[in-house]
Image (tube, rainbow, N blue to C red):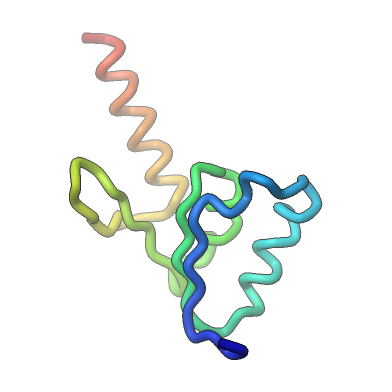
Amino acid sequence: MSKPHILLLDEHTNHLDMQSIDALPDALDEFTSGVVLVSHDSRLISRVCKDEEKSQIWVVDNGTVNTFPGTFEDYKDELQTEIRAEVDD
C-alpha cells in the first residue's frame, strides 16, 4: 500500500478547494504509475490529459466503455456538435 502502481480517483475534487484542485494535476504528473481519473471537472481533465502519449480518454455511455480517438478538446468539440444537432432537431 505504500507504493501503489495504480490510483483510482472517482470524483475526487468534489470536496477540494481551488488550490488543491490546481495542485492535483502537477502531483499526478509526478506519479510514475497508472491513474484512472473519473471526473466531471473539464478543467482538471484538460490538464491531466494534455499529453496524448501518456493518457487515454474513455467514454462511458449506455453501459459500454469506449476509447475516444483524440484529445479531450476533440471530445468536447464532438459533444458540442452532438448537442447542437439535438437542439436543432
